[in-house]
Structures are given as structure tokens and as C-alpha cells.
Image (cartoon, rainbow, N blue to C red; front, side, top):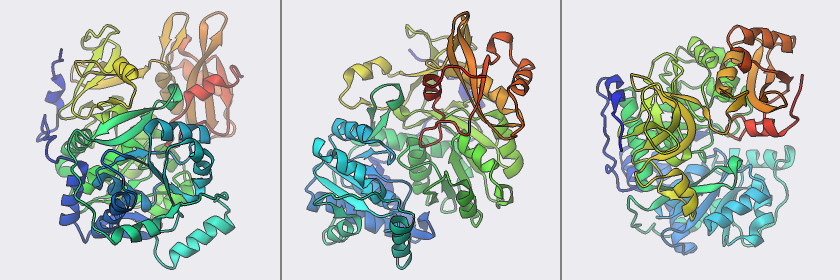
Length: 559
């Protein structure tokens, strides 16, 4: 059963309701077009080195050739990439895809336990890893089926003499590379040389072949690999491109890519969408170094940036950010977690560019909804992207009406095929009718805008009343003394659960009473925080999403 697409009436003029998801048979076909069209243009920049489309074409073809000709990998074999945002990432990524193989994006910060699970679950035949994290690979290697390890140092693609200097400093001065010894490991530069000695065979890659095993759900149980096909990725690339429409200038875009490319948001919205139009991705290797981040972008006239709320908030609170040149900035796109009103409004004030919120998940490649470019913050996650349906459903799959609260469900060509080798888990979230159950609670208004009320699992139940952490966090984030905040439910003898907030101060003089007074003005009694705790930092995922679960699992009460 479908839902009436009332959101189409709010689409910007000229935005198509449907896109051509068959425009390219594969991601590799899109890349081939871009390499041919934009050869001399800059494609990726990192730590002062820029590689053109032609260079990325040549090096990724060499890496693909190495995988097929030297390692004798076959179509459908999985290759893990365990790299931060460095130039080796797009070279390896495109090499794997052009060879007709499947990318297993792997978080470099994984523990041995997490890495072992992902390598064994995916059945990866090879892994590309930064030296800094190779000791973890060494630890788990004997317990996996990985046959080849390709290692690379941070500065390997930076050219002489910068590569040598960077690698010396990283290894010997900063001592960021734990000792490792992996017999038979191949150096990345050697792999490129070996691959360049032979041609990259033409791979037979079609829309239904799996481009990525993108792992998700590690915080809610065992991590599962979402099977994202070439069709899924091409569809989402087309959907995002169509939504931004004529605001994207072919061959002129400069995107700040601070979220890691192994994360689905940056992978699709930065890497693929802007490769298609000849854009430049500026790779930020360590966005947590906010001062260094601001210094790096201060010399650029960039046109777009993507991030999560904590990233934008961090930039806004870094000295010198307000002096950056925002004259060409037209696209600021937030996702991955809720964008807070206080952050969005301050971002617009400082940069002159509206911070628009989109929504999606790994399982939808990821974009499902997006707000209108340039529109002021409205608290919604936007309207469904072209060729996408959203509905609000109850637990029995009945579609609910305007304004009614239920589970957000997504249907469209970007929705994954399912979870890798987990049919039972797939059945829980993906119905025969194509609806993907997101686990997010929300509603739709009369104009087709969707609003997240909260995650099912994050909802706090106070004396039978539903309390949604996002609402409390939004209120507290407007207090000028607050830098960051997270709200969780903790056990309470009287009310079942009570609200606890954990806050990082901007103003050292801030007190718990200040927070309670602030909340009384905007929140009804049962929503007000019973407990207020101050910390120096909040636990976050590597892309900056706050880990409420860790806060719930830690000391139950404070203040």
C-alpha cells in the first residue's frame, strides 16, 4: 500500500518528482564518464596535495588491476578498506569498484573484537589499512580468511618531499604507529606499481551487483552489513543531485569533506554526488583537531560542507572560524543526527548560509528526505527525495494520517537489498511491500514535511508519558552557557524512568539550577530533567554522533 505524495506540492520549482535510476549501470560507469569529462580538474585534495580526475583515474585503475591480475580476486569478492580521509581512500575505493569487487568500509578506530567480526562476517579476501591501525589487523588476522593485507603510511600519496617528512613525523616524532609485523603484506605504492604493469580488465558490473557491504547497528547489537547495490548507490546519487539541481555548478564545486568517506553520508553526498559533476572533495583527515580544521579551510573558497550537528557546533565554537571566507558557500547539509535549532541559527548568522537538514540511514544509501536548499531551519527532516516515498506506520504496518505519530518507513530505489547473510534480520526491517522500517518515531504535516520525534529505543517513559530526548536537548542547547547536551532516561522508583541530562559547559559558571530554571520555561513538568551532570566531553561515535546508550549505561544518577 502506498501513501499519497502530498510532499510533491512543496518541491522547489523545476525539481523532478522522479529520477532516472538507470542512468548508469554501475558506480564505475559514472566514474568512467567523469574521468573522461573532467580529466584536468582537481578531484581530491588532502594535506596540501591535490590529485586531478586523470590522476585518480590512472591510480585507481592500477589498484583495480593489482586486485584482479596480481591477487586473482574474482567478481563479488570483498575488499575491506580501513582508512581515514586520505588520498589513498578514493584510489582504493574506485579501484575496488572498477574491478567489479565489493567494498567493505571499515572504521579505522575499530577494536580487535569489532574488526574480527566485520572481516569474518563479510568474508573479506583483502584489506587496505593505514599503518597506524595495522597492529589491530595483525592481531586478528590469523582468525580471519583475509589473504592479502595492503599497508600504507599517512603521507604516501603526498609526493616528494612531503610524503617522507610526514611519514617520519607520524612514526618517529608523534609516535602514532604502533609496531606491527604482517608477513607478506604489500605496500600500497608497490601495489600501484604492480597494477600499472598490466591493464585493468573490463569488469562486468550490473545494477544488482553489490557495491558496498556497509556495516551498521553495532551499537544496538551485532553489526550487520547492509547490501547496497550499484543501483542503490546510483539512485541516491541521482536523487541528491536532482534535489540540489541548478544550484550545483558543474566543474566548480569545492566540498569540505570532514566526515569520513567510510561513512555512508560522506560517501554518497560528498564523494559520489560531486564526482559526477566534476567537483573537488577537500579531505579533512582529523576533524577533531578543530583548530587545524579551521586553519585548513581558511585558505579555501569552498562552496559546500556536510556534517553532523556536533561538527557544526564545534566549528562555531572554534576561534577564527568566524573569519573564514564564506563568500562562495551555498550548501551546508546536516544529517546523521538531529540538527539543533540553536546550532542552525548560529550557523546561518556566522556563515550567511542556511544549514539544511536531511535524513536517512545506512540502509537507504543514505538520503531519504531533505529540506529545501536555502530555507531557514524549520525543525523538520524535510520532504522525501525524488523517487522516494515515506509513510508513518503503526506496529501492524497500517499507514497513519497527517499529524499522527508512528514509525517512519522508507520506500525507494535507494533502499538496500537486505542484510548480508542475515535473512531473519532483513525480514524484521524490510517488508515484501518494500517498506523499510527505520526504528525512528515521527509524524508528517499537511505539507508533506516529516518530523522525527525520536528513536524508539531512546524514548524515555516517565509515569506513562513519552518523553523524547531530542526535544529536551533542543531546549537546553539554546542556553548560552551550554556547549553540548545529551538527554537519557534513568531508572526511578516513583516514575519508572526520570530524565537525566549530561552537559558540557561553555560557561564555567553554569550550574544545575541554571539548567532547571531554563527548562521550566519551555518544558512541562514530567519532561524536566531530574538529574543534571556536567562532563568535560560526551561519548561519541567516530563521526560525532552522541552515544546516548553509553550515557545510560554509565553511572545512573547525578546531581
